[in-house]
Image (tube, rainbow, N blue to C red; front, side, top):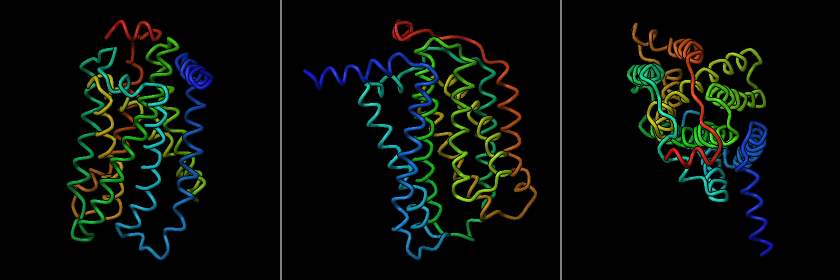
Length: 270
């Protein structure tokens, strides 16, 4: 009985939603993810940074642990079905612009990688890591954070902005790995705009799985094309992808409208 009441209280706490609960969730996830990253350091040994084993250990394994943490949380509050159900608010045609821009440059980056300079195992390791990254970061920010904001009755502009801002803030942790302040600030600007694009992808496709997959192809395409760029003018054009995403996300942000109310409204709309 006591255990049941404890679980009910846990679920009631999160069902109330709001931005500060979203911050608690994200902060808790961030701490656990950082601990997971530190826990894999003894496994590195003398691994070559350009080997599949290195990518799997440094990137894929910690984020996989993050995925497990997020699934466990979803099961504890009973939200997994809710997160991956059809969206309660429909998208507009112009939201496809965000999807198109991100997808276009992902394809261009994959097309301008010098695959002869690397090997299949390394590329496959990045693709697997990208899938884990897409699942974890989208489930957390476009899944849980969006859900928490909507449960509190916030308008969709606030929902989009907070989920994107939280997503960007997560990347401030790169300072801990030695990344420069300037590079981190640039990354925060890009990830905020990218977060807006992913929110629009969520709205217009109607299901969280699509921004997850779109995100899953973004990080590997960026890292692989940066590390192994092919020769040619198309490579230079593909390199403009981050700028295009920043412009797209910031411009489209001003067009976001709509509102989804409390949990009762969410359930009634399905």
